[in-house]
Image (cartoon, rainbow, N blue to C red):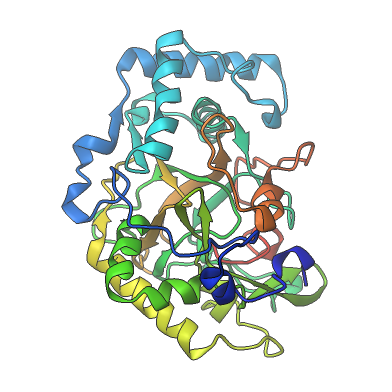
Length: 389
């Protein structure tokens, strides 16, 4: 169990106290205003889609070719090794402002005309992201920096992996609204293959700030439950039994609520069961998850998605979900997204002191980065410590 994840007193006490140095404030933050507190149709695709011109795509393609000629490892991709024209660089940098101070969702569109192969697509995705947010998260469990979100359910399971199971990113089941816990400030997804019409897999986003405002009015005790540091997260370890880490699912950053609620490490997932030695979530925690899911559905909107898009989502304030999807004629789905988690040190929100190590760990300097072109191992070796996606 991680010592820094435990508070000497309950978060409820801290919420009610006159002074606190812990991760939750003395009282719940007041209602939030601004472009990040939206619902449904208020998030118009015309507002969050940023289109690339043909000349900008050509500039990106030239940068891809230039990087390949340098014969550097992909972990060396940066603004220095992936130079773009000044106007395009400013355009991409402005995306970060929208993610931190605007609606928290941006879709970069137009890259499909480049017709990149697998290697070029990874280089372009990583290079573009370096202008939006310069720091890439690397999971300490598997040194995973870039992962492939795809259907691996039809693949032959090797003997060594028969008891491991597949993470949410490798199966076709629906995923409830969540924010990926301690994974990074920004979720970036590159749509390599949309999967085709009528197969499902549509994506949805919901503003946690809107949910927060609603709960302040109707059920503030749900927010207090989220802020209590007794949620029983099951964390995986290589070749060892999992361990228990207690912590909250709601944090605050200078009055900004941060949601880090994901069900898999609390309840298990379709292919990775929760270890029976782990304590069960409490009734009030189950109720809180139910209420959050209900409100997220109520306030959500479907993300406008096309092949070639790069989606950027604020993982601290925006919850995301996915409907189930399937292949055709009994075959695996062709739906395929590349995924990274990012942080922009210029615009990053401060994190609560008690849990700063948790938030900072994926960005530990010097950690080896894996940016695989093809997903050769869909089992837990690259699924992440909490095995949620």
